[in-house]
Image 1 (cartoon, helix red, strand yellow):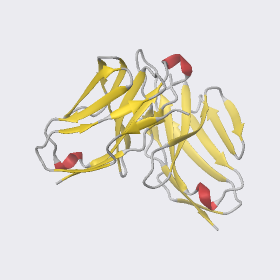
Image 2 (cartoon, each protein chain N blue to C red):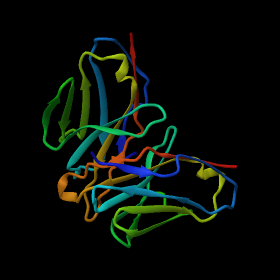
Image 3 (cartoon, helix red, strand yellow):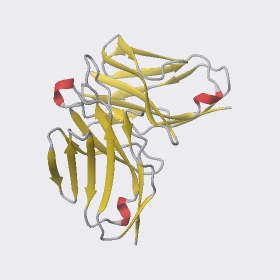
Image 4 (cartoon, rainbow over the protein chains, first blue to last red):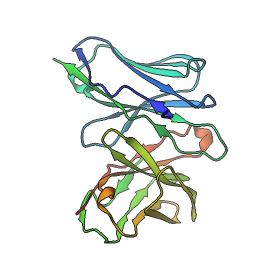
Length: 113
Length: 114
């Protein structure tokens, strides 16, 4: 089982719709969770991070965390063609001295005009 | 803004060559990382460093080594490049762990080994 799992997609949504991206993780002790966006040929850029159960909103983006279910999601409201990219979920694993994030393989999002 | 600079963006090397990938960050971050990214496999951690001259193996260290002689600079070394090391290499940095471990990436280095 991969440590961080994402559906590779592509997830296709029409412009203006809500895009829902999901991620599950295996390390129950994980404390912090991140969503990165990566455009083709570019490096990942941080969108949001979340530490506590529940929702965290930032503009059109909402991150949702459910530690009991080991599940984190990203909602993108009013999706735009410019949101078309690969979205990477990342987790900060538990354990002494572990400072590096573990990434999922990413979900490719396509927003249709 | 945090700036992580990878000096070599596109490289083509021959099998067996020694390859150096350089990375510099300007935010005085303690932690620095090297990942590689391949289609379908996502980002995989090669090595990371949490202080000058300190390093730890990541998930796929075989065939690689690293050097951190100064806090701002973290180099990835391929001692003898092989074709299966053709990939995009991403350097990243982050502040200390108690800051949430948000990491910031450089622009990437595309390496082709022929």
